[in-house]
Image (cartoon, rainbow, N blue to C red; front, side):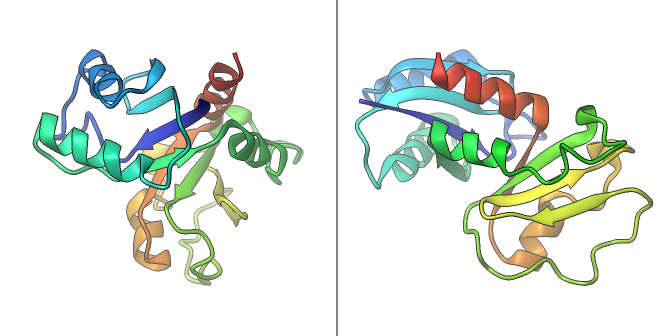
Length: 175
């Protein structure tokens, strides 16, 4: 058994509501063990046999249980650790970690960030090997550098987590 982290895109917003206890039951129903949810936004740490179908199986089970489709991104603790280690923004002077985020892309390598990134004072976006590092000092809720923006310009599904959540998920997966 290996440890995995799954991130669900767009749950508990609008009509796509789910209780984390019910989500945990979905994972356990698939035979996954040591299932732990983190916050109410579809972050799940679990153990399972490695399989190329993990994401697909979870997506199908969620659709069956909740009646809507949700993109599911599967990560290993090592991949999350790489994301943390490679963050080019966290060591910059004046960067407040409270406003750091990371946008996970379902498919990385679709191309460079376009030149038309909205010019917003002090916001930064850096394309990394695993997604987009963001610094949004005005708050993520106010940025134009949203999941929808990156999905449109990079033509792939995206889901963003704040830096504190990423660190917590990595620690949870390692414990």
